[in-house]
Image (cartoon, rainbow, N blue to C red; front, top):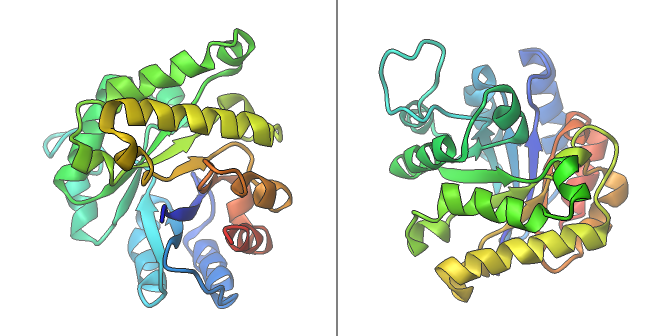
Length: 253
């Protein structure tokens, strides 16, 4: 059975104390997860060790980095390598979030290198893809995201691809309050799975979780997650509120 994942992306928010309190509130809700369900907290670098300590006794609750360097090591002041993340027990890393692509000019080629660094260090990439508004309005979104996958992921082996998590983010719906309709989300997720199947085979494509990442909130999570190819969400603003995010976790069922 394919994993169902509620992933929180805190971005550059919360102090250490606020983050610790938020985790305590969410974990304190005591939401039991089925074997195929996971909750992942993508927290800022300084909070990774604290967050790992918070979740390590919880079944199917994990942490993630929000980014890593494409370089293995070296004179890259301020960067964090996948090897460093592995050394402190980080199992997931978000790769290619639209904000990284836009603000830090991360190309598909750079993201391919980041994906490689993750797999070299036994870290599962949560690979983000998605189109801006102009592409959606031109009705070329399918080709746009297909190119993102091809240029960043198609060098992988089928065994590696089977470990990926994909997050589809319609950029026009991130932080805007707009959300792709359930039909739009399902349509794109099905397309992504067909692209993966054409390259890696149906068996591999069928086990890759594809998360929706555009203004997921408690009010729309149940409907979104009920779609056959929507396997959970990469949640931004709503993940900073314990009541909202616990409701999203419950929507996995």
